[in-house]
Length: 394
Ligand code: SAH
Image (cartoon, rainbow, N blue to C red; front, top):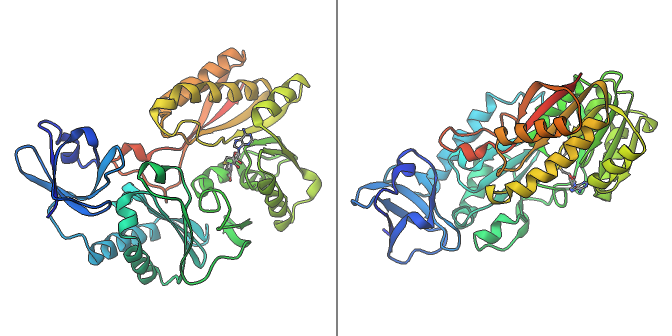
């Protein structure tokens, strides 16, 4: 079997069951493994530590499949996928949603493999050389484990480049999804497009947080920034918001947002939509002395890795400062960061700095994170990417 041998003293994280082996930890590669092929991982002393997928193009040179010497084959993927799917059954009430994450990569013991279920469709993202190598087998096993016949690929993500993979989108099995299908979230309906929507179609990781916002919206004038297709907007209206102004840079997202408001029977005049750059929109609203009772900030990833954290911090501070200035007394800010490179601690510090500079007294009344269908394996803390704070101003 092809083997990679680690440098002396570089086996600690593998022994702690961290799934990533960085190129700097590798002393030698024996044999000539192709991208995605399984390699045996040995310590400097020659001890077998487990098996991994080899990724020659990436700084993450190998991702562990298992921490023992074993065959990686169809039976392995069948077992791992069954486990992930079985564990979800205890976590997701079908009445809560028919759209949720079935497989969450490293945290489900399947590095680089993401699968979301939307009713009768599965959407697969293959994010690593190992995932790509086993893709066909994974699709077969998925159909087997779930009974869902339609599998669509949305591997159109930047991280593929780092793995030396091209972006890819298309049918893997069964039929192509319709350009508009409805999913249900806590009794609310949302139109999603699995082919061209962002991520795999919908921001499933925010499901619980949208419900939290629903519970805080009664009678409030709401500003929903980075609204995408109006997830928080519809939940705020369901919670009795007086009106919601939603802002996003994507015209298609806003169009679908308005459709989602109508789909749930809320009057169109309670929901206003504004296409623009949130940074500019917030500044001009501040200059016009506009005020709100509840502001949501759910920006895209400003810092995928820690290296971009400083620039990202300025972005977060900017928008949070402006939002604090526009809240009425007693108003609420639901603010999020999905940047892997910004820790929960750092995010809280940034928000605290924003409140200070905005001259408001604010407190955290709730801490939020990604939903439970996006678990964080304890051996993979990097999996905790989404953090949120609900802050109340005095
Ligand atoms: N809250 C949403 C998800 C937001 S994702 C939900 O629950 O579904 C982030 C959104 O920000 C995307 O829709 C993207 O189009 C938008 N976006 C990115 N940069 C932006 C900018 N500078 N100004 C306004 N919108 C932006």
